[in-house]
Length: 153
Image (cartoon, rainbow, N blue to C red):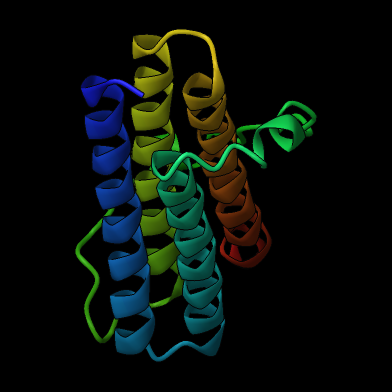
Protein backbone atom coordinates (compact mmCIF):
# COMPACT_ATOMS: atom_id res chain seq x y z
CA UNK A 1 0.00 0.00 0.00
CA UNK A 2 1.45 3.35 -1.02
CA UNK A 3 2.03 6.21 1.38
CA UNK A 4 -0.62 8.23 -0.47
CA UNK A 5 -3.24 5.49 0.04
CA UNK A 6 -2.32 5.25 3.72
CA UNK A 7 -2.79 9.01 4.10
CA UNK A 8 -6.16 8.86 2.35
CA UNK A 9 -7.27 6.04 4.65
CA UNK A 10 -6.07 7.95 7.72
CA UNK A 11 -8.04 10.99 6.55
CA UNK A 12 -11.12 8.82 6.04
CA UNK A 13 -10.71 7.42 9.56
CA UNK A 14 -10.69 10.99 10.89
CA UNK A 15 -13.91 11.73 8.95
CA UNK A 16 -15.58 8.72 10.58
CA UNK A 17 -14.27 9.74 14.01
CA UNK A 18 -15.70 13.24 13.50
CA UNK A 19 -19.08 11.83 12.47
CA UNK A 20 -19.08 9.49 15.46
CA UNK A 21 -18.19 12.37 17.80
CA UNK A 22 -20.90 14.60 16.32
CA UNK A 23 -23.64 11.98 16.66
CA UNK A 24 -22.51 10.88 20.12
CA UNK A 25 -22.31 14.43 21.41
CA UNK A 26 -25.63 15.40 19.88
CA UNK A 27 -27.34 12.31 21.31
CA UNK A 28 -26.24 13.39 24.79
CA UNK A 29 -27.51 16.95 24.30
CA UNK A 30 -30.95 16.43 22.78
CA UNK A 31 -33.89 15.48 24.94
CA UNK A 32 -36.17 13.97 22.31
CA UNK A 33 -36.02 10.15 22.79
CA UNK A 34 -36.41 9.45 19.05
CA UNK A 35 -33.58 11.86 18.24
CA UNK A 36 -31.36 10.23 20.88
CA UNK A 37 -32.00 6.75 19.50
CA UNK A 38 -31.45 7.77 15.87
CA UNK A 39 -28.22 9.55 16.68
CA UNK A 40 -26.94 6.62 18.72
CA UNK A 41 -27.66 4.30 15.79
CA UNK A 42 -25.84 6.57 13.35
CA UNK A 43 -22.87 6.83 15.73
CA UNK A 44 -22.61 3.04 15.87
CA UNK A 45 -22.65 2.78 12.07
CA UNK A 46 -19.85 5.36 11.82
CA UNK A 47 -17.86 3.34 14.35
CA UNK A 48 -18.22 0.28 12.11
CA UNK A 49 -17.02 2.28 9.09
CA UNK A 50 -13.95 3.35 11.04
CA UNK A 51 -13.22 -0.28 11.89
CA UNK A 52 -13.37 -1.25 8.21
CA UNK A 53 -10.98 1.55 7.29
CA UNK A 54 -8.60 0.59 10.08
CA UNK A 55 -8.76 -3.02 8.93
CA UNK A 56 -7.86 -2.02 5.41
CA UNK A 57 -5.00 0.12 6.70
CA UNK A 58 -3.74 -2.94 8.61
CA UNK A 59 -3.95 -5.08 5.46
CA UNK A 60 -7.17 -6.98 6.25
CA UNK A 61 -9.00 -7.51 2.96
CA UNK A 62 -11.43 -10.25 4.11
CA UNK A 63 -14.43 -7.95 3.72
CA UNK A 64 -13.58 -6.95 0.11
CA UNK A 65 -15.52 -9.76 -1.56
CA UNK A 66 -18.69 -8.92 0.36
CA UNK A 67 -18.67 -5.30 -0.79
CA UNK A 68 -19.49 -5.97 -4.41
CA UNK A 69 -23.07 -7.12 -3.75
CA UNK A 70 -24.79 -4.20 -2.08
CA UNK A 71 -28.33 -3.07 -2.68
CA UNK A 72 -29.05 0.11 -4.55
CA UNK A 73 -29.95 3.07 -2.39
CA UNK A 74 -32.29 5.86 -3.38
CA UNK A 75 -31.46 9.43 -2.42
CA UNK A 76 -34.73 11.14 -1.53
CA UNK A 77 -32.99 14.55 -1.79
CA UNK A 78 -34.99 16.01 1.07
CA UNK A 79 -31.89 17.42 2.75
CA UNK A 80 -30.85 19.41 -0.29
CA UNK A 81 -33.63 21.90 0.37
CA UNK A 82 -33.12 22.32 4.11
CA UNK A 83 -30.72 24.44 6.12
CA UNK A 84 -28.98 23.02 9.17
CA UNK A 85 -28.64 24.95 12.41
CA UNK A 86 -26.06 24.18 15.10
CA UNK A 87 -27.37 21.58 17.54
CA UNK A 88 -28.12 22.70 21.07
CA UNK A 89 -29.77 21.24 24.15
CA UNK A 90 -33.15 22.44 22.96
CA UNK A 91 -32.74 20.97 19.46
CA UNK A 92 -35.69 18.90 18.44
CA UNK A 93 -35.84 15.87 16.20
CA UNK A 94 -36.22 18.01 13.07
CA UNK A 95 -33.03 19.95 13.87
CA UNK A 96 -31.11 16.74 14.50
CA UNK A 97 -32.37 15.10 11.32
CA UNK A 98 -31.37 18.07 9.17
CA UNK A 99 -27.85 18.13 10.61
CA UNK A 100 -27.57 14.37 10.10
CA UNK A 101 -28.74 14.63 6.46
CA UNK A 102 -26.18 17.31 5.73
CA UNK A 103 -23.39 15.37 7.46
CA UNK A 104 -24.18 12.15 5.59
CA UNK A 105 -24.40 14.00 2.28
CA UNK A 106 -20.98 15.62 2.83
CA UNK A 107 -19.38 12.38 3.96
CA UNK A 108 -20.78 10.51 0.96
CA UNK A 109 -19.34 13.15 -1.38
CA UNK A 110 -15.97 12.82 0.40
CA UNK A 111 -15.89 9.06 -0.24
CA UNK A 112 -16.90 9.51 -3.87
CA UNK A 113 -14.00 11.93 -4.30
CA UNK A 114 -11.61 9.53 -2.58
CA UNK A 115 -12.76 6.64 -4.81
CA UNK A 116 -12.03 8.78 -7.88
CA UNK A 117 -8.45 9.38 -6.69
CA UNK A 118 -7.34 5.78 -6.35
CA UNK A 119 -6.72 2.93 -8.77
CA UNK A 120 -9.12 -0.01 -9.02
CA UNK A 121 -8.72 -2.43 -6.14
CA UNK A 122 -9.72 -2.91 -2.49
CA UNK A 123 -9.22 0.72 -1.49
CA UNK A 124 -11.42 2.00 -4.34
CA UNK A 125 -13.98 -0.71 -3.51
CA UNK A 126 -14.05 0.35 0.13
CA UNK A 127 -14.50 4.02 -0.73
CA UNK A 128 -17.31 3.18 -3.17
CA UNK A 129 -18.90 1.00 -0.48
CA UNK A 130 -18.64 3.75 2.12
CA UNK A 131 -20.07 6.33 -0.29
CA UNK A 132 -23.12 4.08 -0.74
CA UNK A 133 -23.33 3.53 3.01
CA UNK A 134 -23.44 7.28 3.60
CA UNK A 135 -26.21 7.65 1.01
CA UNK A 136 -27.98 4.81 2.83
CA UNK A 137 -27.60 6.69 6.12
CA UNK A 138 -28.95 9.83 4.48
CA UNK A 139 -31.91 7.88 3.11
CA UNK A 140 -32.55 6.43 6.58
CA UNK A 141 -32.56 9.92 8.08
CA UNK A 142 -34.68 11.33 5.24
CA UNK A 143 -37.28 8.58 5.71
CA UNK A 144 -37.55 9.44 9.39
CA UNK A 145 -37.86 13.10 8.45
CA UNK A 146 -40.53 12.28 5.90
CA UNK A 147 -42.49 10.12 8.34
CA UNK A 148 -42.23 12.39 11.37
CA UNK A 149 -41.77 15.98 10.20
CA UNK A 150 -43.69 15.94 6.92
CA UNK A 151 -46.53 14.09 8.61
CA UNK A 152 -47.10 17.18 10.79
CA UNK A 153 -47.78 19.35 7.73
